[in-house]
Each structure stands twice: as structure tokens, then as C-alpha cells.
View (cartoon, rainbow, N blue to C red):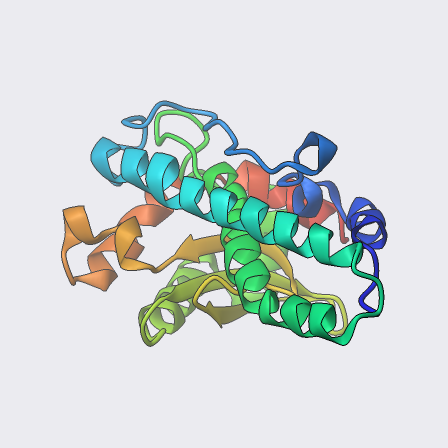
Length: 228
């Protein structure tokens, strides 16, 4: 029979802080507050996009995840009934899509900061040193991450992730709302149209170039430090 939800929660508690930050108390997921105003990232990301992206799109993932987990929990009480197992299997896609959307966006909001504050500023430290070691320069990283993210077919995410096996930073992508599981996420860029279309239309490169002005490198460095 599928493992109890409590076991899943226990495993989540053992993960780094940034990976479990999306889990709300008492098993109910909630929309996290932004650490800045909706218009704080302008002119690079408009307040209109941020409001819709956060209050509508992310809220939809939260609602979908809570609904799927509620249905899943009810199936736990059905014991080893074969029909319950089948229904639980059917729920996996909803859990993956909505759970991934919640995880990815919770990380994404902290990934950003106003240009007037931490946004776009990579200061001397472990992150800068590791980027220069693995990519040669920040500009090289930007070019590679932008190119691979722009090439995502349909919707998805571009990531700067830490490979635990090679002990290096690497650029990877994921489809749809799949969370990054092969690497520790350091920086994530949402390439779903709802993240940029109202402002940048179908010109993905302009959005990808602009977002670096509000990347919170301080937050990214804090994530990196947990695995160094």
C-alpha cells in the first residue's frame, strides 16, 4: 500500500530549509507572502504581472495541491483496497503538477529582489567564486542559462543547480511545473508565459535579459552555502 502521508512529511522535514519552506502548518499549504510589493521589481517585471502571477497562478497551485492531498488522505483510510490504490495512482499527476508549482514558485519569489536593494548584485563570496570556477564568469552563466531556458518547448523552468555528484553548478531545465530533483536549486527562472507575456509578449530573450536585474544573488548564495 502507498506509504502514509506522515512518512512523506517526515522525509520533507529532513530536507534543507529552502526545500521545505513551502510546507505550511497542520498539513495545509498556503500562499506565501511576497517579501516586496508587487510593483517593486519594475521596470524589469511589471506590478501587473507580479500580482497576477502570485495572487492568481500560484494560488491556483496551492488550491490544487490542497485538494489533491485531501483526496489522497481519504484514500489512506481505505486500507489495501485495490480500487483505492488505483485512485491514489490517478492522483499522482495532480500532486506532481500542483506540488511542483507550489515548490517552484515559493522558491522563485525569494529568488527575486528589487534592483534598488539586493537585486542584480553579485558580491564577492562563495557564489561568485563558484560561478567563476564553473562558468568562467557571470556573463557566461547568463548566456548559457538564458539560451537553455529560452529553448524550453512549451512551458517550464530554467535552473542553476548544484550537482551533488560532481560538486559543480550546472544549468538544467525542467518541463511544466516539475520541481528540480536532480540538483539542488540555486536560481530558478519561470519561463511559463504568465511570467512575462503581458510585458514582453513572445520575446523571451528580452524577459530573460531583464530578470537578471532583479535576481537575488544573496538568497542564491545562502542556498549554495547549505551544500558546500
